[in-house]
Length: 151
Picture 1 (tube, rainbow, N blue to C red):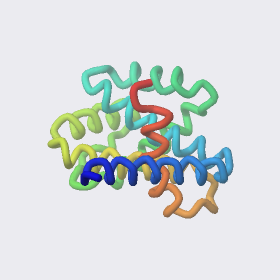
Picture 2 (spheres, rainbow, N blue to C red):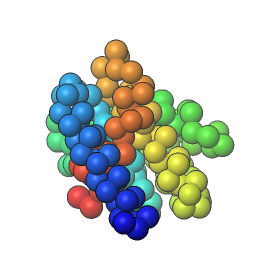
Picture 3 (cartoon, rainbow, N blue to C red):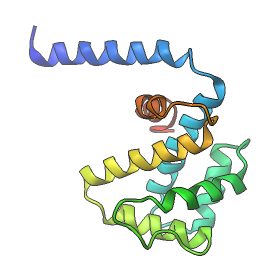
């Protein structure tokens, strides 16, 4: 067997294992993971859109989400963005504009890392308070790949 064949077999096994474990998670945790990764996806895919358009897309993507809670959580997460002290604005529109500029300025590797960290933080704040952060970290990429990417 070649290295690539072994690698792809390992990757398939990993995602199969993640899928089995995913089914064991509480529904609120699953929702938080999908929402956290989905919100970052919406922002990243609409870097030139208006903040209100982004909020409308989030509401359309997640019709049962409390958009006011989304605004609060984005504002809270924006306070922690690495190297971007100017991101949190006085209102959600300014904060979203600043996040868009921040993501647009990042190189590919840095963008992937920061998008993942922000998605993790969003998911952690949407999740029930007793959810271990390790669960969020472990499943955020799975949630993105299965439920958000390309949708």
